[in-house]
Image (cartoon, rainbow, N blue to C red; front, side, top):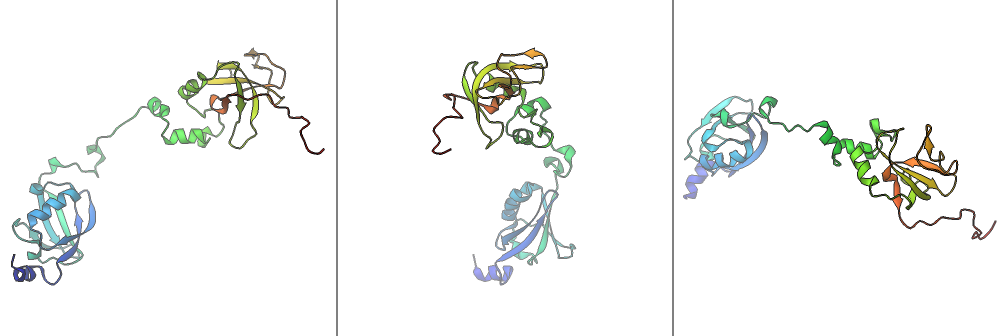
Length: 244
C-alpha cells in the first residue's frame, strides 16, 4: 500500500477512539483507521452481536448529531471524518435475527422449582442454612431433609461419637443410641447418651421414648453435628493434674 495515500486518508494519528453504541451494548473502543469498513464490521460483530451484513453504521459527533453514514465496505475507516470520542452507532437492519436483551420478554429464562432448588448445596439458601442466617437463624432448619437423611444413614447406633453444636464449642463425648425421624421435629435426628450429665433428657421427649439413659445424659442433635469414631470415655476428674 502507498503510505502517502494512507497518511492522507488517516491523518496524523493511525488510531481513533470511538464510542460504539447499539441496542444491547455501549463501550469505548480503539480502531485502526486503516481498517476497511468490511473489516471493521467483522470486529463490531463480536462487540454488538450483529452480523456484518446486517449492520448499519452512522458516525455521530460529540453532541450525538449524525455526521455521516458509513456505507462503503471497500473504504478505509480513515476515509470518513472520524475523530476521537465520536460515536459509532450500529443498528440492526434485520432485527428478527437479534434478541433485544433489554426486553425481558424476548429472553428465555431457566426456572427451577423450589424443591429442586432446596436440594442444591451451592445456593444462597444453602449458605444461609449452613450458617444459621435469616429464617434459619434458630437452627431448626439448618439442613434439608435429604441432607439430614444422607448423613443420618451413615451413623450407626452404638457408635462412639463427639458432638459440637457450633464451631469452637466444647466437644461432648458419648454413644449413639438412636438414629431416625422423631415426632417432636421434622427431619432426621441422632439421639446421643453423653458420658457426663451434659444432656437435656433421659432419651424421651414429650412423652415419647426413643432410647433409655440416665436423666440429663440424653440429647437429640442434627446428624451434621455428630462425628463418629474412636472416642473413648474421658475422665474429666482424673488425677493427672500437676497441682490442686
